[in-house]
Amino acid sequence: MQLPRSANPPVTTHERYIDLGGEVSHIFHFGAPLDLAYEYFLDVPAVFRLLPDALDCSGYGPERYRLIVGATDGHGHSMAAIFDLQLQIDPGRVIRIVPAHDGPRHTLSGLVFPGALSAEAVFFPEPSGTMVEYTVSIDLSIPIPSVLRLMPISFLQALGERSMEFKMTHMINGFTRNITRDFYVWAAGEG
Image 1 (cartoon, one colour):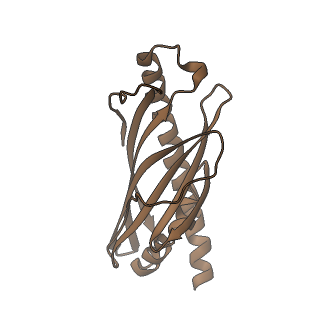
Image 2: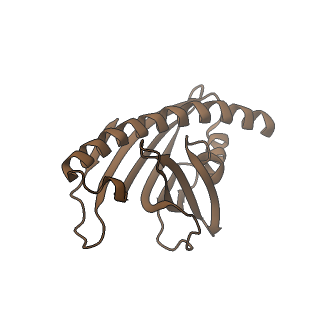
């Protein structure tokens, strides 16, 4: 697991940002045939709704999805990250999610900002089922709320990096538990 990576904040005249990113990987083992595991992961909205703090994931076009993840900044401010996604497949072997740049305008209120999310699920047959190597990478530029703008950017960047590490760990652990449980419930209904 690699956490976090950061970049220098962009230079703007109106707002200040904290750039954050992280990547996590997990290996799933399912006691089911590869084609069944592959079919399960093809349902992008159902899989991404299993992420902790996912508020919604729905399609907006052919092989295009919008994921909205909510959070708080620890000071009572709610925020949401919007990830527009595009599905790419190598049938029976790889499912890739890459950032899309053609999503519709959002109608959410509050502190809302776009993010970039990439994911890859690689499928391997095993004697007792299927192994799935799953990797998720997230990059965000989070606007600094006005109440925090007087704080030094270095302090806010360090705080953001620690928060991102905690959030990514929380998300992958919850995602792992939720997928493992949900897959077997889903597979029982398919059989």
